[in-house]
Amino acid sequence: GGIITQTPKFLIGQEGQKLTLKCQQNFNHDTMYWYRQDSGKGLRLIYYSITENDLQKGDLSEGYDASREKKSSFSLTVTSAQKNEMAVFLCASSIPGDANTGQLYFGEGSKLTVL
Amino acid sequence: GDSVTQTEGQVTVSESKSLIINCTYSATSIGYPNLFWYVRYPGEGLQLLLKVITAGQKGSSRGFEATYNKEATSFHLQKASVQESDSAVYYCALILTSGGNYKPTFGKGTSLVVHP
Image (cartoon, chains in turn yellow, orange):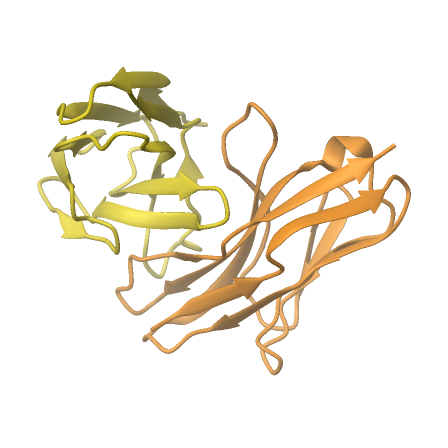
């Protein structure tokens, strides 16, 4: 089996600061995702990457940048953190397409607090 | 676009009672719908509870069951007798395959609280 590692698990930043979350997977999956999880709003897709060096915007991409430097890693940057912004960010990976159910595998999440 | 609607907010159930969390979906994009239930226990990551990729089939795990009803476009989660350890947030998800679709669709989540 594989694992998805998100770092850091807890991130505290100042308003206006640029903050970066990192995600590593050893499943050798092609596709990776970043979701934002808020209570009562479910999982909202921020960015996804179909394969290495690919980037696709999700429904909540404004205010974020992403980078897929290599197949195993996918980073998410909050370009200017907003005060009172608290959320859990989830990284996931999958093998899409006919040969797979499309199941997503998730990391444990990174909790962001902005002071 | 594609959408998933599930029982919203918090559901409170007494231990040993039955549970149903409703989930209906709408798949308008190209591809075949595969259906999933994910669960997030307190302090843990989001993990797969069960999945069904064939219409008419039932999936089961940890005493939970869900049947892929293509006619009703539903995938309700049921359990005959809940335990306190089932307290968690449950997400219904739709993932389309065979159509080049890479955007899974999740419901808003249902928080289950089981009282002893």
